[in-house]
Image 1 (cartoon, rainbow, N blue to C red):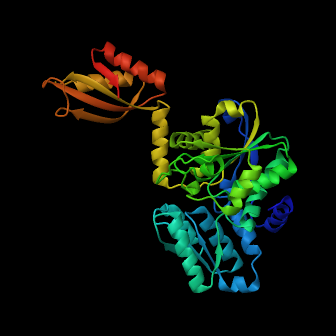
Image 2 (image 1 turned 180 degrees about the vertical axis):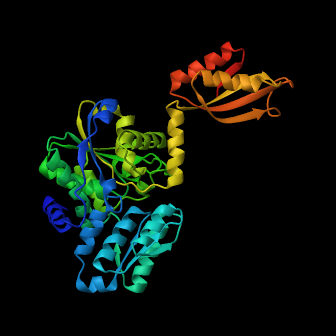
Image 3 (image 1 turned 120 degrees about the horizontal axis):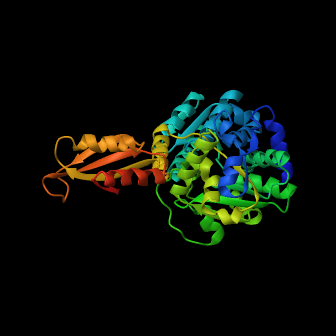
Length: 399
């Protein structure tokens, strides 16, 4: 099984090839979560993901014959970009097979790194099978996204850097897809600090490693905002490492991940994708488990579709009470809308949208239901706006 020497050798190969990313405390997030939180900014890598580490370590060890033949990989995005970038840097041909649902930003960036992109299949498993077929047909070297010791060793260098900066960490919280990142990190961390706790995090909709380790049979979904860890089957190599060296695996839901993305954007001014926010999502969902501990989180990727990000930000504002939808019932007569909007303005809220509902309502025919989407300062402010409207004689309710 992989050991610390393998990861230290990978670190030597990666010197000068990938960033030694910042690892710093977030005082605000620490206050909000009740533990001392340190963030590893792997989203600052050139391809915005830790995946560069494993890809570079693997490609650096290819023989002259393998280099001449070129490489092929299957990935929903981040592994693809890591392989494409380092293959281009080393002068290798790279073919990347990606599922058809892959966000456009990841597809275009992968092409931008000089790779030949093939979109095939609706699942990672279908893409993997096609990549294997192309590898056999064209003599390409298959670079697995996680079930390869060279890949796992490269990812494990993240833990070396974290423990060098903060040797007294109590816990590492790491997102799990196929298990490459946590497998490498747990190998390094447990060798350096046998007493350190390593906790894995999976999305509830893709609990493959959780099921494998816990012996459960939770159903698998079809999509998640954490598509970077949407893996249906854990790796053989990585599952064995997780069983031996990871202390526990927890699940987080979509709302936890969305909240974590917005927190990191607002507080740390840093952009992460769903998988990159999974660690913080675990702290949000299970605060008592980490209370008072020194916790290291890996912001493992920052490649998120802009339209998805816009939706997550808006939904986050709704959860925080900074965007609210209210219904005001009023007589359908001239001047009432002006009175309503003036009352809202006097209460300090801004109107984002206005909808008149005359037909689809149970109100008397002379009345109208006016739906307002408001920008507010929070839930207390929403209550104040509703109270002011009610005092002005308008029946008002939060939708």
